Length: 294
Image 1: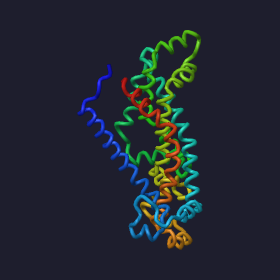
Image 2 (image 1 turned 180 degrees about the horizontal axis):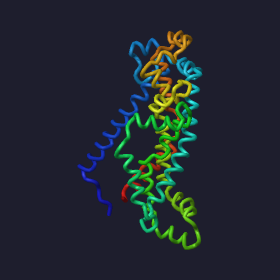
Image 3 (image 1 turned 120 degrees about the horizontal axis):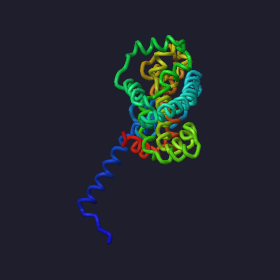
Image 4 (image 1 turned 90 degrees about the vertical axis):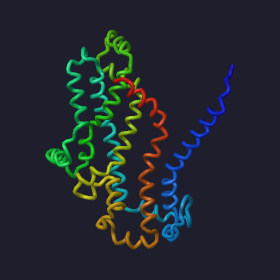
């Protein structure tokens, strides 16, 4: 027998949908507004007429942004950072999380190593020791300065560690009895069964590398080595005029400062927006399953 929902229950569901729809609209409004500004005429943007739809539609801002060599160079550096940094992060995360997920009978010093990593989350050495340590390695103003200092994301290690713990021990024990080694158990059992968590953490790493700007400003001496977000920080937020050529200043009379900023911001968002739809289905499963067992 199908039991009909009460009036109060139906009202509750309707209110939930309305509330979530309002939150979604509030999140989408800034994005749509930036997109509309980037396609609008500079006079309409300056007059504050652009809201959710372009006025005086044109592509001059995108022609200006995509034609800038500095923007293209910073964009390529960010792509390289993601292409190299994400595999490095995920490989080291898996190699650290797997042994820490084993019991003490399998890994005698498990707790000591676990606390070694956890302490780095609770306590920080500070900006100056962090910079001096990186400088002592000789990688300042090089591409590897954007990769190696954050090569082991400890928060991701903890999530994947807890996910590995949810895998039944009997599966691995059966493989070991059949002659498999620890490496085979890791790559042929633990990793395939942890695909949701690994996909989620991969997306975390992609977003982190793509959106990071602080490391570029601190660790790069030359603006030519800035990743995209560091470049946008200097041009849009701090307005470092040394990075803006005379030709660009002349073209601003056609496109305005706001339209060019909106176009740069939207172009910078596109790669992440393209990745999200393919990995978002793993979010709930990966995070929930990786956090319920300590």
